Length: 130
Image (cartoon, rainbow, N blue to C red; front, top):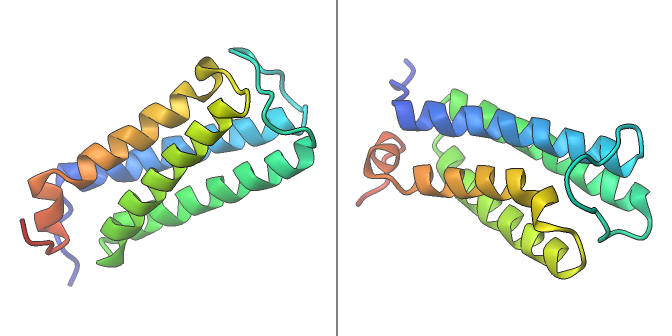
């Protein structure tokens, strides 16, 4: 028997899909397959390393989507921890020279995931006490 998925969890799951798409686009940018349209991406000196890292982030976002869509209990904790770590990585990238404009979609997606994770209805859906 599956738990009923509230709208907050559904929104987090779709934000995870958007995060995966965004990470995949950044991966292609680091591989120089598609051009960077907004801002300057200048943190990595060896773009293969950046592409590998962002490709890994895309896979983690897809795993997060699967956990949230099937309402696995550990999905809530994984969502907010991963979103917080992604925000930290974005901050490090900005300090390293990447422009705000280039990372703004990733920052917005991760911030929205954090906000939705800590809403009372979302916590209640995963059995987290208030």
